[in-house]
Image (cartoon, rainbow, N blue to C red; front, side):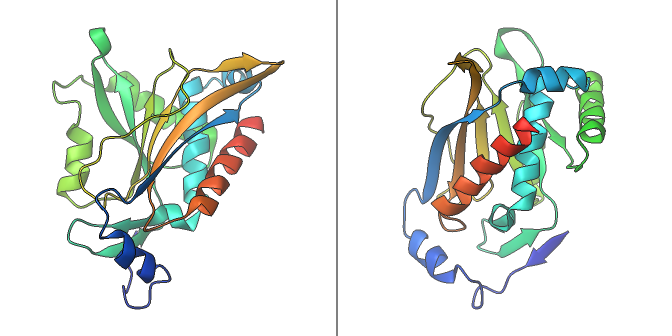
Length: 214
């Protein structure tokens, strides 16, 4: 459910006014998250590793209020009860992909079962951005983006942006690497600095780490 925010009483009204003047008011982070044993736990649950960590990331986003704030292209402020995920799913050769929307469910198995069904029954489209464009057209900003690059580990990443006030979180997850007996996965994150600060980004990474270790 969408909730309109009064800009005059919003706790971050000064930050919004300040960052509106920036060409790029976003913050981009890349951090390794420990995921030792997460692949094995996903397999034990009968869940793909992608959906396993996607659920952890989506759960963290839904638990942190600042990640539910949005600014529309018209400047309307709002927040959502629940955030869904727009996931980039490979659908063909030579890297062809489509974007699918998965609704949030706090239960991992239920979430993964419904998401996997969407993946398995999805008909490939020549337009890889259909779901994303539909969300934008209908001003449905109750989403976060998750892309995966499982063949490459990276230490930084720069995201494309539509406008200087794009407000939904955008993420890219890389290849799992092993180091000194532990496993780590890089997660790049792009968020609006008008709506959150580094403190909230830190909460996201810490929570994802906790969830992947459960």
